[in-house]
Image (cartoon, rainbow, N blue to C red; front, top):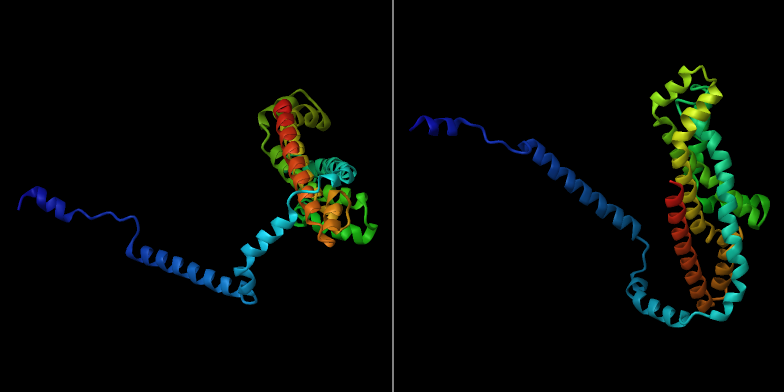
Length: 273
């Protein structure tokens, strides 16, 4: 046997994982499959499969009753549609007004107190993000009664978490060298904030605000389902009387509104950023 054969025989063969590692990987996949099967059985325990198998026929029957849309109903949708846009716009402005101070309090490089104010601001941001706009609307309708005010406040409170989180992260990612350069001139804390930090986060702020307005257009369209006004109220009324051609028209109007808001949002972000 040659020296080359001996060296080849003694050279260990490299494997991506050890035998124990491969066994653990297979056991992990088996556990995930078992967990999926258990969860599926739990979720479908009370499912009436006769309705599931009949779903295509029921869906086809519903589509036949819902088409064509009742175009004459459009004259009653202009007002609620305008209310929906106002809910989204005013709610976004309210969210911005609350989120901006919270973001500066939550950012580690701008907060005046890391032990008290920063945790409190972070808690407000997390609490806002944890509650869906529909739940906010349910709570506010029960407190204030049905109407546009509940919808505006629901959108505003929901927007605080989204805007505040992204904005305070942008504040923390600002270039410290620019802040130090402004501070080296003897500027006060307010001047450092105004000339060292705000110019850096301003493009991000505009982008976040416009993007959130676009999201709020979609969310405000369904707040009427719980009495918070807007076109969702017309949708709920049509569903209650099984007026499917009207439901189809309302869904098409919501879809068109979302597409237009998406286009406007993209154009505005392109112009501002």
